[in-house]
Length: 443
Image (tube, rainbow, N blue to C red):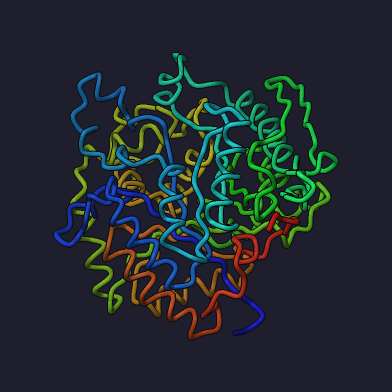
């Protein structure tokens, strides 16, 4: 093993590719099938991956379009999935080292409950928990929480800034060694090592402390993604791992350099902030076979579904008012997430793609497409890593089980052969796997 090592997480997202779930060997029942999640977790741990990662949204995607009579909404498999914060404790029981990370929004949650939930997961997993901090980006979620429209972008991020301060303050509320459980003296915990947060801010009043005591990692790992100015600032100040949608190596290196510089300006060690590029591996025995598989899956995506899927990513702008075979128009600013808008314009402009071609690209997933043999996939990953464009990758296979098996069973071994990835776990916690800042934990 060399001194350089990729960080690798597996993003298990049922229906991420809008056509792959229709393949004969795909198991679409992954969305609600605990037995399939267990198998995927074991494949990830056998490959010695850092973490298994789950996205979440508290709404059926494009449900407003369905209400309006758009039948293609029912063809979108990305809508159906379990609550990952309930799923991960079950996976903790069938794994030993694999990190387990789940998305949970700061916009439609309470910081005390969220801090307690992830501290509990850290206890259950013995130090393998991670929280993916998001502010949510669609109107459908807002309408499930008593709002007509989504919370304004700037306000969402102000709330998120305060939210994460409360969460980390609560995680720090118990000092190491506070749990005495001294039977002879009849003292259960040390009052001098229990701290009240007493937070009062713009959005929250939280006294603390948590009922969970200090967790094994001290603080579960914080993941975050965001391309906007507030998103980058939040990531640089708070995140241990930052995901990015970058699909071009120079832009990815600039993004990584920017986040690292911002982190250092906040007084953080930039080496403790890991940048993972999202990538969709489409892998087969040869490059030709992989390209044929990619084309086969792409042909299973209806044109109307591809376009209707792109519209919410474009901030709700109705692209059907334009010639779909024409160039991508300038997209107006919106209250939705900024990362996808920026990625859409970048992919369309850089590739000279039409609206329809761009829609097909994002219907296959929003991330960098790596199509080829295991050697070709590893070549691409090594090139990005050596160029300083990332610290690793968030791999998003197109379908289960074949897509997951191809990545964990062929690409990862090739990376290991090159000395780019571990062959055995050397630590026990997710923080140790990732090489981010460690905190004193509770044994």
